[in-house]
Length: 93
Image 1 (spheres, one colour):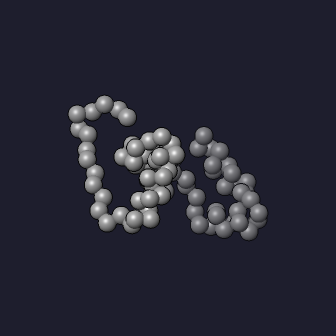
Image 2 (cartoon, rainbow, N blue to C red; image 1 turned 180 degrees about the horizontal axis):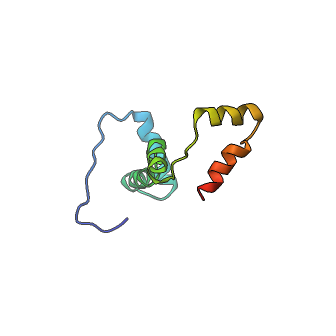
Image 3 (cartoon, helix red, strand yellow; image 1 turned 135 degrees about the vertical axis):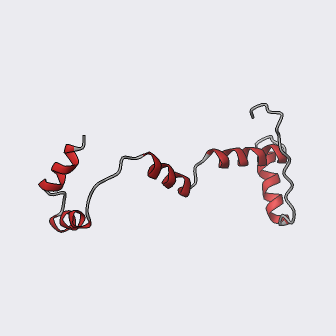
């Protein structure tokens, strides 16, 4: 965990007793406290992009593709990208 003066405290209410027992046992089996185990779970979750975040990053960072619906339908119907579309795509790079 990184050192920070801005460390938060999280309290979770109404946790199902069975869920709590499973989490306690998992923490114990790893030699961790329950709070340490839960902190590791939250850190791992926060470090992993959600599907929505991945899509937003791709939309923000990728080069736009300039294909028309007709280009896509021709490629679908002909089983691949036709020479016209391929030429337009290669001309961009």
